Image (cartoon, rainbow, N blue to C red; front, top):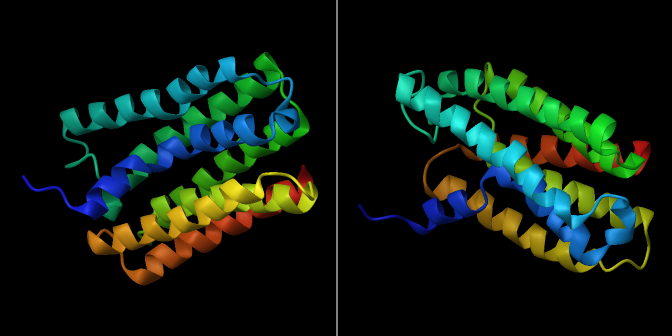
Amino acid sequence: MKVSFGQVISQVFHPLLVPTMTFCILFLFSPQLIQPLSAMSLPFLFITTFIIPMISISILRVSGSISSLRMDKREERLVPFTFIALFFGMTTYLFIYKVGVNDLVATIFISTTVLILVLTVVTSWFKISIHAAGMSGMCGYLLALCYRVPGSELIYPLLAVVVLAGLVMTARLQVNAHRPAEVLAGFVIGLLICFSALYWFA
């Protein structure tokens, strides 16, 4: 079966990979901002925010609860999104209370969980783009940090992520996964929640 460019982009920049991508960027460009968190925590983050949620989604697919891993139907997204919100909530608890993180990192975890909860609620009546929300959320975090830490090298990954966000949103439209309004709504909600969290509360 022929795989389109839009499908490849949608898989490479899967929303569940955004937390790992975000912290990889911070480790590479501003590791001092997230101390005492170390790069050794990245595999654990990847497992709890990507591997375990994907396993749960796969189980739902095998059981027939959802018809596709892409969850094309809005109605099928509610249960998987609820599971994902629970996994992110548990990850947030573990990192804050067991691993031990600074206020900035804690704010990222909490606001990411809040974003997922908001997206889950919105999905109950509107097929909002999770891909757009994830990429714009990463933009929001980096943009807020550029404001909070003038002169940091985070401006470079921010510019790259902005371009990638545009590419991902275009891909979602190209594969007919969403209407323009759904992509725009995802972008706005992700950007507002994540930018506000780090700019005002961290």
